Each structure stands twice: as C-alpha cells, then as structure tokens.
Length: 232
Image (cartoon, rainbow, N blue to C red; front, side, top):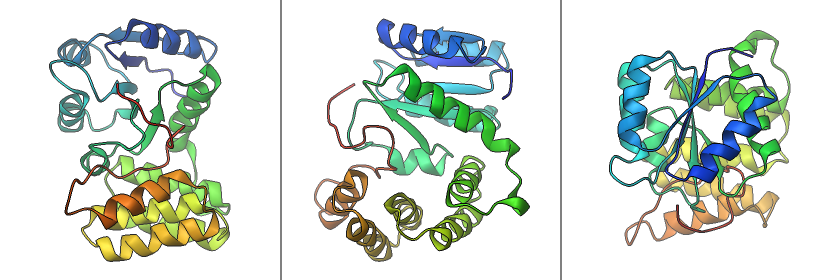
C-alpha cells in the first residue's frame, strides 16, 4: 500500500473524523478539508495519493474539485462520498476517472476495505490476472486512467470468468451508457437483474434509462449501500 497522504474532503465534521479514525489502523497519514476551496488549496500545497471526496458541498462542489484534480494531478486516486442512492453526476465523474463510490452512512471497516482495494490496484499484474475480482479491479484501474476501451475488455474477461455475478454486467452497462449507447446499456442492466432481481444498482440504472428523456440522474456504479436514498 502506498504511503502518500490521504485528503478527506467533506463539509460534515463527523464524517471527516470518522474517516480519519477509520484509516489510522492502515498507517495512512490523513488531512482534511471542509469545502472545495480548502481542498484545492491543500492539493496545491501537498502531494496526496488519494482523495475521499464528497460531491455535495456548499459553495464549490465535489465535481469541480474532481475536474481540478484530473487536470492538475491525474495520478491522484479519488473515492466519491455520497448520501445519494443514485449518483447525480456519475456519468461525468466516470468520464473523469472516478469509479469508486461509498455511500453515507458507512462503517469504518467498509472504508478501510475500499481504500485498501483502491490503493492496491496498481500492484495488480495484468498478465497474471485470472479471477473475476482481478479483472474487475483491472477494469477500475483503467477507468481511473480514463482508458475506457481497455476497461471494457477487462469487464468482458471478468464476465467470462464468472457469468453469475451482476456487478460486472452493471459495470459494463455503465461503460456502454457513458459512450451513448443506451439501448445496449439497457440490455446489460436487464441481464444483471436477470441474474439477481434484488441487485439495486442495476435496477436503478434500468429505471433511469427507461425514463431518461424525463429526468435523467446518474449512473449507479454499485457503491456501498447503493440501494439507499438520502441527501448529502
């Protein structure tokens, strides 16, 4: 796991404290910012390896911070924090390389597990990957680098390795929808639900695509507690 500091950006004091305490056992140095403006100032001053970023903040929102990160420091990994069951700006966030989401409220173990997974992604050896999980992680690594063709290929390999899991099909649908082919994306979401009718991310994506001409919300990439609603 890398030793670069982690920046936690959230306007809620309890969330900042919970995240900082949760990451102590991983021996990661953490810093915090209460809003987008402070986050940008700290990003200019210090070399962070990971940002835990709340999308919904007063003033400068998380999406603007994400755009800045991708322009100035594309190497920084980003985990999106949200209280929304469906991410309003997930299509744009995904285009900017954000694929890891965690929904409030979360347990400390959830955030530790996700941070460990994200930071360990770079150590994966593509030529040795065989399992479903390895290919999904390689796909997410490619999305983080905005290598979307390669990401789609790794998702295909994941599905070939295990065609019984709905999250791979949901991720494939998200990649395809991001490219504008909503009909093919619809097929992938339906296939995910055929495998598991209770898989909420695919159901939310399917429902949204069906009514996309009315009020389109964002792609649900299947983050923690993705089936719950709420506002940040």
